[in-house]
Image (cartoon, rainbow, N blue to C red; front, side, top):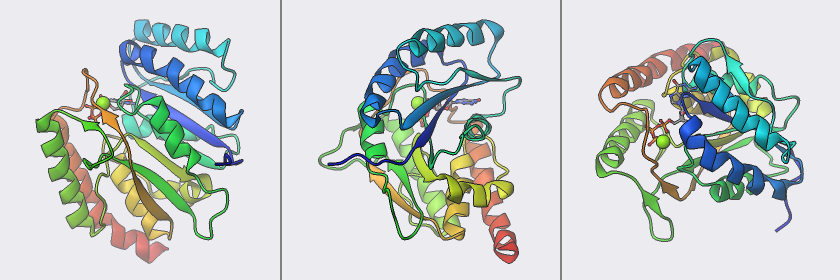
Length: 253
Ligand SMILES: Nc1nc2c(ncn2[C@@H]2O[C@H](COP(=O)(O)OP(=O)(O)OP(=O)(O)O)[C@@H](O)[C@H]2O)c(=O)[nH]1
Ligand SMILES: [Mg+2]
């Protein structure tokens, strides 16, 4: 298979992640070499403690010696939330054709990131985004704690029903989208927390961007920060908020 020639700006949003990213980032840098300089990786540090920022800087700077496609650490002065960190990183796209993010913990392996990025079409009649999806199916390996899997299924069903979008997994931590499609919707995006990708998905669809879900392998890594109690309620409210604002977007379109 020939590799796509378009460029990608891949952001890793991080909050207190120096313990988990250390195993993942070197693998990711190595895996991106197959794209011969067309993928740039940017780690965004989202208002963690000073000691944590220092540790992250050391990890990134050490790797940059061998991997010039890894950009200097971007440090935000205050915690914006996962979505806020992703968007802050995407603002530095430097003309990349595609924008992407992946979670810092390596739940989605470097190999899977490379597999999804290699699927980006160099030319498509309609703009198309690729969203990774944790589908438990024959031929794929998805390992998650049962309670997280179940809650994830409830949330995805809520998203799908409330927004009338047949999405299987809106929250998977690996997504790739055309930069121009993102720029068309960026002014309307308001959700900066864990539900940011629900709003991103709805806004892309409403402006005519296609989204394909790509089943990937996923292995839950201990130390996750999404709290089943605290964050689920906030995330459910955010879905409702997107549902209420969609008709207003459409009037303005
Ligand atoms: N920027 C930012 N990123 C965060 C924040 N909290 C979590 N993240 C990032 O979001 C990504 C996913 O967070 P996790 O803690 O792995 O979430 P999880 O609880 O494991 O949930 P799943 O991975 O979906 O099972 C990681 O890259 C985190 O660093 C935050 O407050 N700000
Ligand atoms: Mg995780």
